[in-house]
Length: 100
Image 1 (spheres, rainbow, N blue to C red):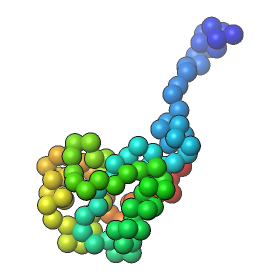
Image 2 (image 1 turned 135 degrees about the vertical axis):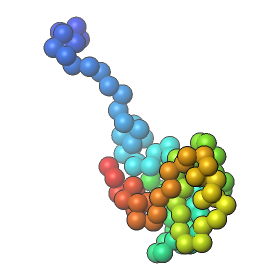
Image 3 (image 1 turned 180 degrees about the vertical axis):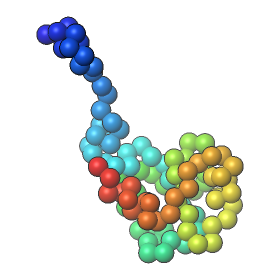
């Protein structure tokens, strides 16, 4: 049966990370928060990221997936830019939190 499916063009695939981790949209992602976010406190953002399967680190590294930058961002924002880490704002973070 498997051979027949392969002959028809069906290819096995690994489920996307979110689906593999119980549907958590930020599963396995590492975030760094910098500056002041307009609506979320740092604690609220950290809690929401963790609830969605992500982790929050205190410093930027090559393993960082996103830096969430608010008003008054400084050295962490500079580090993200120099390492090529994507920089997002609170609006984009909230969008990522609701992605399925």
